[in-house]
Image (tube, each protein chain N blue to C red):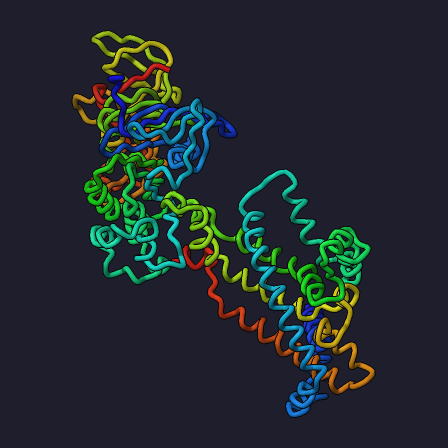
Length: 346
Length: 264
């Protein structure tokens, strides 16, 4: 045949209440994240690969192994698919010890996995006495102990304490780095996806919108949806040429901004919060875009503070925010360069 | 609102007193010595043996068929599913005497299957097998109903997780569903067993009351009532003790409700 077959190949359609999930992609090696809002069909995708849900039509397989093929009437049950799955709530067996959980699917590699996931000291504990991060490691060890061909992770960070998020994320990245099999992870959080995966596929309403590295998605989002998922400000407006290679955009809210992107007509203006500076007085400088508005909210995330004023959110260091004495209700100026302002036609 | 609190307390006291008083009276009528003496009498001993034997066999049948049936009813849905569940529960509300007549009309000499079985040389009515069938008929819904609830209470995610861990359907059932439903199954099992011990109406119609063959403890109580009232009371006390012991024993079965895992 000569056709190149990716290790994991997925191409199927499945009806959901509001929309059809229609996906086609392959994964050879490494870690790919599917990012999208809740209800976009991400979990359905993983469940379908694992054999817990049956598509209307299509093909799912690994190399020359066929797991599902509607034309050839193949539909292997989950236990025959060699898929390792980590469920969102981890789905640990409450009546079994850590060790028995890990050994449930395969006793041969149980010791190795307990060792690798640093669970040896906890092996006689019951899941109820473990922390969120520890439960996650048990779920991972249990899935990997079966020697799967692919690893699927459903929102691995969602049921964890937000306070421990960064710590657990770094730990999970290290652990996943050692996993030598194709890994598919779904998450609603672009930051999690960017921190854990080399490739991110953005999903909405059951379809893949854009696939790329995290920096590709941030640099060139296909549309306003992808941009806002990556954390950008997306503001609607009308663009027209303004000379000097600039476009002038009248924002729907009443302000005017400039961009080095060429566009005409209805556009989404995309600007990342970390490209927006906040000041109290208009200063002379190279920055072209200034929006003066009262501060709607100011939220501290550790050493960063997110300030919303008018249509934009700015992200600055908490130190700068304190130095300026930014508070809700104060009028301030959000400034950002025309070169940091992307225009996406709608 | 004080009068309302008072009303609640009075109502509760009346309920408790009414339910407890007859039991207390039973125990006041018979001393432990009398109890043992009465049980030494032939009638009580014969009835105890018949009861234990038929109950044990009936219970094995209930558990053996009821557990897989309940698992299927709890985990799969099909057309007529709820009708099936309703039919299974019907004997719960059926007067036991009616159950006895119904059993006779199936297995009796003139019943639905009676003629066929006659040809084969099998006769069930008025034998110990009839006692077993009567107990199974009236007691099994108590178990099956509870078992369905118990299996439905097992988190589907855990059953799915087991499957992705390459467990066969049998292994999913035996290693995950069964242990996680254990508490509910034990409760249902005890309820069915106690109900079976006390079975009277269907048994006397379908199996008769022949001492040493089909006369169970409740039938013996009824038989002794006008001959030896003290013996009737002694047997009654025995039934109360067995039932109470079983219901207490359920509490020793571990419970794995979902909250034991999600609580921090």
